[in-house]
Length: 239
Image (cartoon, rainbow, N blue to C red; front, top):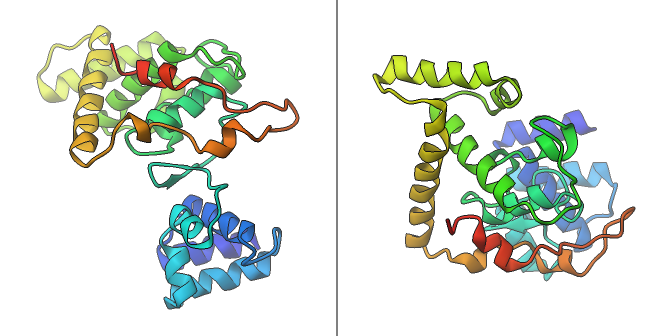
């Protein structure tokens, strides 16, 4: 059934992550029962046919939540969270909150040290990760700008020669004279451009926040809530 859902998303040109979150919100609203795969398939066909309900669901998780009065919508800046509950993994939660793209783990994959033990080891439940999140955002912005897949990061985080090779590759193509010391600077410049775009579009620091229910509802088995102060989030890009 999962394969059929994925295929339908492809057939209708739907993002699987956003659609999955939308279906969860619809189930929270009582449009379907949790775990009812057949009904989920029917709802995807509603989207494909452009019915009134399908148009609502096709607009994404946030719009679906607003229409049906559901507060428990895991999204930031209109984008549904792709993976990893931020209550138990604080660094990725900070990334979700401040990312210029909304909730997006690929804008700063702190899962690497928090869960996988790549590029060091960080306690996922520890809240004080301003520097870690900032550094991952800058490094990722640089990596994205090179055109390489994000998964390349796994080969360069713990292998200095890998990062050096990527910078040398850029120099060979662009005629620049960068060193690895320029990576963070370039990434910072990219993020600054993105944040300026968002500011012009009306986004403020008030949008760099996680859904309120996550600060109130405990997540088992650790029974933790989202407890990173707003001031900590705002510090990431206030250098």
